[in-house]
Length: 388
Length: 249
Image (cartoon, helix red, strand yellow):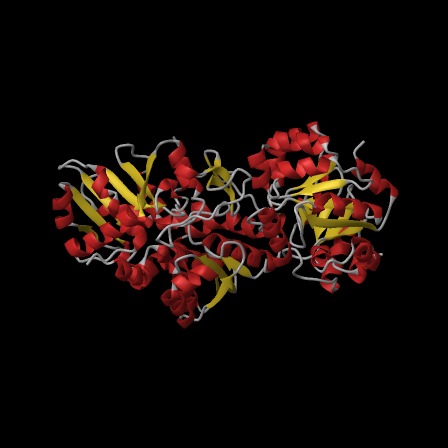
């Protein structure tokens, strides 16, 4: 089985570039150049230096002793939460800003849900002295105020999206519309392994540094790699170098929200069927007329109605196991990690951690959980639900 | 014979009007179609409302949202079209997910049976169309209308021309619908570049065409022009359809 993207931009039957003709030249420009750029020595030198000296790579692979004792197995945490700006998102934005510079673009746009990708984009734009416009749903702006303030402090313009459901999917629509209206001078830094080809492949490649490091850091081969999936960029990065090794079981954790059948969920693989969102054919939560439904999760980074086409393919071919975790389970896992290991995880990553209780790994097995982000941004939610 | 082929052999300065099915009321579709037809409009594009219309500006987005809330969907639209018989050719315009979920073949079959002449699916790229769906469209004599923009290379325009068999939809500027209005020097330069290419297909100009002046200017370079956003605005203010058409020509 092949898990790489093919020449036409598909993973199996998923992916492609279902975009209006107005975007064709923009996408072609990236498609025709990205592989050449990211495999050039100049890019590698610059990117690796920034990852090391600016973002803080490599991130530790930490053996979580007390958590391992609790679950009677060997659990390692990949500490993406220790990166600059607090999550794995910076791996992607640093790479894409270098591509944008290479293509001579002066204006950067991005979408954001929880604000993590927005902050990571605003950060690299400040670093490179480029104009930055971040689209964010009106609803998310209200519930993620600290990240909005961070983006503004970093010099970005945050544009409130008032169309549709006013969350991540609508912010992404607005970013794409901006790109149509500013076709020549603008580069769109997409935040996950979603969107038209070549973005899913580009973002997966930039995030693949996560599994590259895990492989080097872990002396034995892991039995399991667990990561949360919204659009799926941290999971794509954590899985990337293990995809072709069937001995490593890949577990992708989606947000069940208030429960799969509650009508308030973001478990795309369970509730979705193939469709088109943001230029990609993938699994998609939609009604019978093909109208895209609004997902829900306590974690703003997981409530995306689609999923990266690479994950739709991993799901379709049974290469990865897709499971879902509720809001309550994720919260419990976050409080537990804080108490046992002194680490406050992002709510997104807490979904991956929560699956440890259901995994039933053996005593001699090794489990790697990708701790994709830190929990500072979620403190108000944690305080609200504090089990005291 | 497909109505679209005869349309372009007969007339010049063609006026095409776009509106969203199910807006302002669920059942206004037939009424608007008949009024447009009686007002002498040459071609009518019926928009299928979609929750995430990437190529549309705020006005059409809003009309789509309201149409969906009104209860519009693809099968209901086909029901409505069964009872309509216009002189002007009808074109359905929608996003690919709506068509895909309905079933591409079933969609084409029903389009044909209610008298639709062509389809515009902005997010179905020509490569995918040629590989997977061309034979289905042809089976039901439906013309697939492709978009081009000022950024489309001449080489790609030629490819689109080769695989078109009704007209080419030239988007007047790189924009979403209803965002960059009027016809300026830049747009005229692009229109005349297209005109000089001597394409085998006629060209209709759309996006940013909103009133008489921009309509007339566009017609200098093409077979006609398409008005969408401005017409939907007029529906909002309850302007009579005939009155709106009179302001254009």
